[in-house]
Length: 277
Image 1 (tube, rainbow, N blue to C red):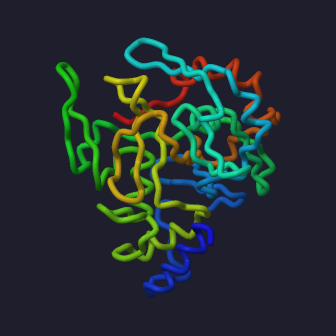
Image 2 (cartoon, one colour):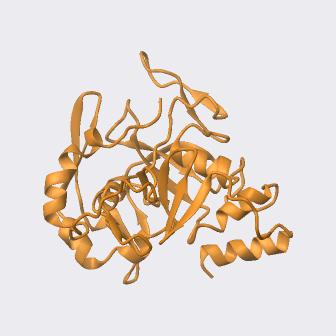
């Protein structure tokens, strides 16, 4: 049973599945695209699109390539290997290291069947390490600011979606409908393959940029730090509204091609919109 079916069963069991409920800040634009009016970003409705999108050929195209990112005025690199993309038997699960997730989303193209437009500017969502709405502040070394992790965070794109719109609560999976509003329950039904798991953000941890990155655990602990080599999930997002009328049809590059990665990865961190301050 996939995540969306489990969710429908859970909602029905709790007596919380409703119809005709307003979708709050989230609007279904069709074609597998969900617009967030509060953040002015568009999410893929298929939360674990990587599980069906990744193939051996796409992975092979990036093996040995360097993923590069910037922090503290320096550039760091990681050489991609098969260990960056998790498989179960012959099937990709969608779980990836932070480097693998950044590589996958940088090479992602998505065809919107409603508007006949291909988007190639997908990225990982932001988390805000300075988000005072989080439950647990901490310090790390001299000269660094106070960082925030834990539950109730709403200051980043990913945390706002999971907490405000989808009802993730302390020590409770996002799939748990108990205590959620009717709007939050309706919002969850906009997405497929939603998992009570960990999702990568776009940001490394500034004091240890080659070891730790920010992620959101939608099953237990909320916002926090994880080793970049851990294999978690990537939820693709892009800036703006797909129905704005300003989007232009683009040529369709080969997803995760060596050419795209060779040109784009070195400057990826500098070119993408950074985390909210």
